[in-house]
Length: 461
Image (cartoon, rainbow, N blue to C red; front, side, top):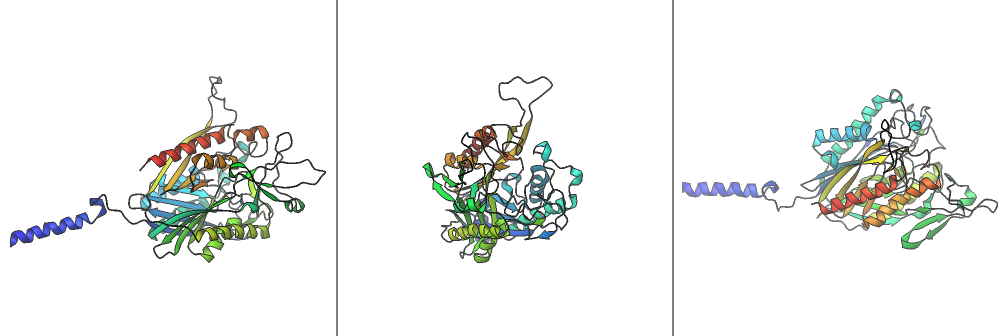
C-alpha cells in the first residue's frame, strides 16, 4: 500500500506541473488587456507650445496620458498616448520605459509612447533634435513638472497592467475626408504656396475628389482674381482598434487619423487644451465606454478644414462619430499573438554631404539618430514613427506595405521635426524649409526603414 501511495503522490505532482504553461509549451495562455488614463494637466502659468513663452491662463479641457497594455502569456506590450506636442526620446521615452521595466518588467522595445500633438500643451522640451532656431535652453524648462509628467505617463501603464482581464481584439477602417485638407497647394509652376487656413467663402467650395488607386484630394475653387492652386492628397482613413472583455464590453480603443491638432491654436493661444482629439475620445468613451487612445496619422501637412473653438468640437465629434460607428461591427478574437520590434535609424542633417561627395578632413557628416517601432497584434500593425510625417510619405508606406490593418502612428517615441518626401524640398514651403533639419531623402529613408521593419516582424515568431 505504501508503494501505491507514493506512486499516487508522484502522479499528482506531475499533473500539477503539466497544468502550468511553463511546463507545457503547447498550452495557450489567455490574451489579457487593460487600460488606464492619468491626468497630466499642467498648472496654470506654464508656457504653452504656441504661447511664445507667455504663461497659460485657462484650461479648455484636461490633458491625459492613456495606456493600453496587452499580454498573450509570452509577451507583454504597451502603448501610451499623451496629450503633448512631442515625446522626445531622451527627455520622455527613455525615462518612462525605464520606470515601466523596473516596476512591471515590460522590455523597452515593447513600449510605444506617442504624442497626440496638441499645440495647446506645455512647452517643456528642449527640442534638441530640431533646427537650431527651434531649440529651448534647458534652464527655461520646468523640470519639476517634467519629472512629474514622466512618472505619470509610466503610472498609466502600471495601472493598465494591474487592470488586465481576458480580452478579444479586432480592427476596422472608416473614413472622414470632409474635415481636412492639404495645406501645401501648388502654383502652376509646381512651387508650393502655404495655406495654413482658408477663408469661409473658399471653404464653401470644397469638393472631395477620388483619384486613381484610391487616392483622395480635397479641392477648392479660389476667387477669379487669384491664381489657381492645385491641392494635394489627404489620408481620409479612420482606423479603429477595439479591445473588449469576454462579455463583449469594451475595455479600450484606439482611433488613428491624420489631421494636425491645431483647431485651438493660434486662436486661443494661452489656453490649455487637447484640441479636437479631446472630443473624439470623449464621444467614444461616453457612448461606448472604456478608455479611448488617440493616435495621430501622417498629418505633417494635413490640417482641419476650419479652426476655432466651435469647429474644434464639430471636427472632434465627426471623427468620434465615425470611430464609434466602426467600433460597432469589429470582428474580434482572442487567438492572437503579440510581437514587438524597434530599430535605430540615422538621418543626415541639412548641410551634410550626399553619398559620394568629398568630406573635408576636419568636417565629418552630421546625423540625427532616432528609432522606429512596430507592435504586432495578430495581423494588426501599430507602426510608431518619430517626427511629423508628410502625408505622401505615409501613403507610400501604406501602399507598399499592403497591410489592411496598418496603423501609422506619428510623433512616436521621439521628436525630429518634419519628415518630407524628396519632391517637397524642390517645391519649397514651410515643412521642408524651416520646419526640418533633415536633409533631402529623409522621407524615402523613413519609407524604406519602415517597410523593412514590417517585413522583419512578419517573419518573426
